[in-house]
Image (spheres, rainbow, N blue to C red):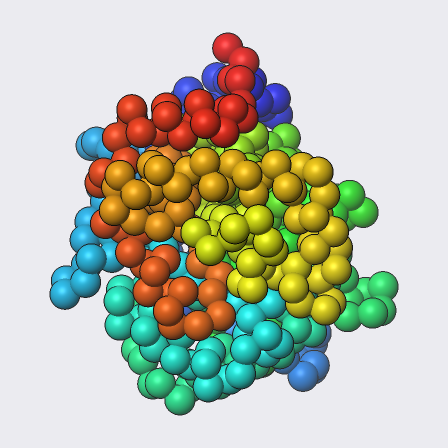
Length: 409
């Protein structure tokens, strides 16, 4: 796919790869060491129920003279664990290649005790990325996550918290990506999380009612104020991501560092035809979700909707209908076709599927969605499968599924 680029190719070529990063490195106190003080005040005039914005040095995008990478960004393995770490796109933030998501589970499907056990096991096995959103369980997921972090007492510098802003409430001003909701929505998230800042704030869906410049300026503002360290997009198209990058460069603002996208064996198009080009051209990484297709990809399927599938949850009837559709039934048959390959590699279909997602260089981290520690440990085992996933095996999987996207030259 040829991405439509708002800014000129000459501008892209003139900037080094380091210049395309998502902003400066933070220093103690939330600033970037630039020595420049923000001219923006607290937009609420010091009022409001959320945390007050702090006046810190302004974060400036890196200039053309910045130092470039001497080679490809390296993957490393953690001490005492088998967890692997990658850069978030071409930024300097090192994220575990497997993260823990909270959609449906935290504050809803599972108890707080189980949620704490999951986080503890994940953290002890090297997971440093925990993802949530203001809309998950109407804010309960963030509260549960915040309570666990407070009780565990882990060093704040040892983990990464991401949240997403778009749906915050019923009022018209409590949703979307207006400057008002981005700032106030993030205040609300921080209050529920009991944190001073999040590491990454995502714009959860593209908002056609908000001008791109307003979105990028608001995201730059919350970073400058120390409320977030990076920002990213979620479920955005390649054209919108490139427009955000172009606006950021035009007005000397901070561009998005990554896109959060659905990616699994039955959902490939965006991750394989659009995002790799963005990764190489402007350094946007990918945090992917639903590697098991909402729980459909499992070795325990046997033609039924598995108990781990979210379609079994009362409020997710739409997902049950999707799984039981003709396309859904065909997918379940394909899952069973993958069993021989999984057996050859000595793994489960779930582990094979997660390892398949991790094989892409554009994927910074894959979010796991689990409801018990048994599932979590099985999914973490995908790291051992990744080394066995040769190009020949990948071709064999593509042939069995018959859904490899065609890339336009």
